[in-house]
Amino acid sequence: MRAIVAYFAGRPLVANVVMFGLIFASIAFWGKIGKEEMPDFTMNWMRVSIRYPGASAADVELFIVKPVEEKLKGLSGIDEISSSASFSSASFRITFDAGSVLSEKVQEVKEAVDSVELPRESEEPVYSQFKSSEKAIIDIAIYHKHADILNTQQRAELQAYALAFKNRVISLPEVSGVETRGYLRPEIQILVDPKKLIEFEIPMNQVSSQVTSQNVRTPVGSLRDRYESEITLL
Image (cartoon, rainbow, N blue to C red; front, side):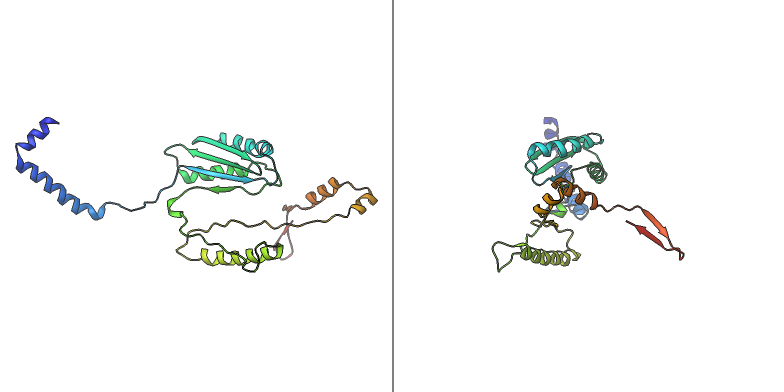
């Protein structure tokens, strides 16, 4: 290093030529160098959340965390898997190896989680991956101005307005995605008469099993009529 400094100190013309050469090169290549104040990037990890309403942390660990972990451990290209179980929910953080194709690994994780036989009462898994290009820039809250505590009808009305607003916003070309929170899943309530159960000697678990077994939507095949049109049987 001392020899280099001594060389340029004794040759000021060479030092000036190198300095001005670097300046001109910087100006010439300024337009070709990629530069952004906030460049797009994607983290090499993703998060999977699964809700199991009403279940204790022990049940969440037994029926969700362990089966999902067993599936994820069989995948290649995963550096680390960390999971947590709490009341009514499970969370997984999957870190991928450096150099992995993230889009392919994310799809493999989704397929592995979807193949797990989760409890019927659990909700659909929610996948999230941080991308700077999809960072939220605005939060919008919609509230019912005539009620502080909503009943079922008012909540359904509010969710209908929120869904219509979401469909309008997501159709804009400038919007890449919309996330929603606070929705209640549709449900059907079945009221059972206790006196009738006693009269006909029907246990409550039999009613529950019948409702579960009858609430099935599975294709059983298809038929072709004489006009060669195909009819799907459910």
